[in-house]
Structure formats: structure tokens, C-alpha cells
Image (cartoon, rainbow, N blue to C red; front, side, top):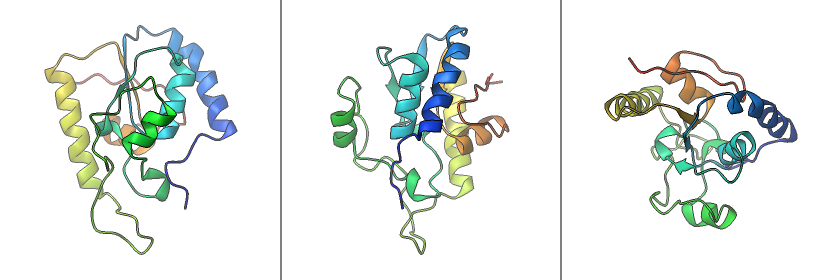
Length: 157
């Protein structure tokens, strides 16, 4: 039971490898899920000096212990240059717990969250933006089963 897990050495290498591809894109905004592994990925892909907007709406579907996040004060301590003040103390899914004590997020709850966020991207005219998120979230938004650190283009209709 690993909670809010960090990137492995392989994950770090995958993020560094994706940096070149990310540099070739016209990215002006970077939205990042508050999980430690996405914060690390964003820093490795885009550089720690870039401004990241932390948004729990793009978090992973809670299905395992690694999908239980860290409270904002712990994240702020680990990443003092980032703003976590807008996050709830428990910004990940809360619900009925399974036999492991994990509040598994039903797929329909994830899909509703994804659909609402995609609609907000359209409504607000968001473009030239990277969203550093997770596999289940990407699949729910695009239908693509992405590899780790794969860049997937999303064009809201």
C-alpha cells in the first residue's frame, strides 16, 4: 500500500525523454494534477521554473492506494514554489471504502468529472495548454490508452 507514490527511476527517465517533444510544442500554460508523481513529471518535462497551475479536477481515478493524495500542507512543504492553498484537505475522491480501506472512484464519477472539465476548457477557450494528468483520466477524456509520458493531443469539439 503505497500512498501518493513518487516516480520510479524508469518514470523519471520517461519524463526526461518526453521533454524534447514537449519543448517542440507551443505550450504557454501547464495544468498539473496534485499527485507527487505528476508534479515530478511536470518538473522534469517542462522545468521546475515554469508556472504550474495545480488542479485536482485532473487527478487520477482513485482505484489503488497510490491514487490517495497528500494533504495540501505536505505538498506545499515539498514544493514551496507552488500554490496548493485552494485545495481541500482531502482533494481526492471520498466515498464508500472497499476491503482495503480505499474509496474507489466509480467510472461514472470519473467520466462526469472529465466531461465537466472538458466543457470548461471549451467554454473558457483554453489552448496552448499542457495538462499533466493520468492514464485513466486521459482515456476518459480522449479514448486513448496512453503510455507513461505520452503526449496526447486533445481538441475539445
